[in-house]
Length: 109
Image 1 (cartoon, rainbow, N blue to C red):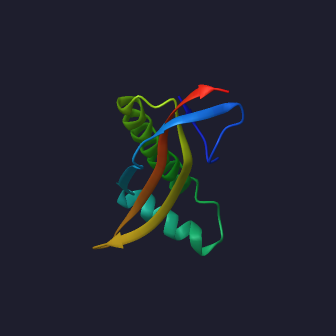
Image 2: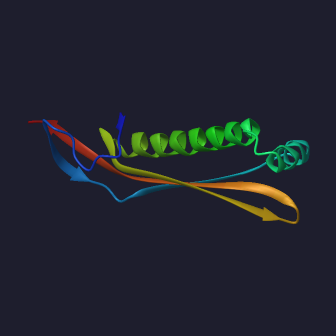
C-alpha cells in the first residue's frame, strides 16, 4: 500500500474514498535523556536523543495508519499529514505525534 502526501496519484482513478484515518502516539522521554538534553541545549548542541524518540514515535504513528488502511482494504493512503508537539507534564517531557490520511481504492487509468 502506498502512502503519500499527494491528494492524487497520476495514472490512477479513485473508485472509493474512506473516512479519514487518524493515529495519535504519545511517548515520554526518560529522565536521563531529558537531563542530558537540557545540558546540551544550553550549549546549542544537536539533541540526537530527542530526534531518535521523535523518529520512533513517527514510525509508530505511520505503522498504525498503515494497519488501519490495510484493515479497510485501501490501495493507498492519500493526503498524509504528520504533526509533532512536545509538552511537559509534571516535569516529564512527552512527544505527541498526530498522523492522518485518507484511504482510497482505485483502478489503473
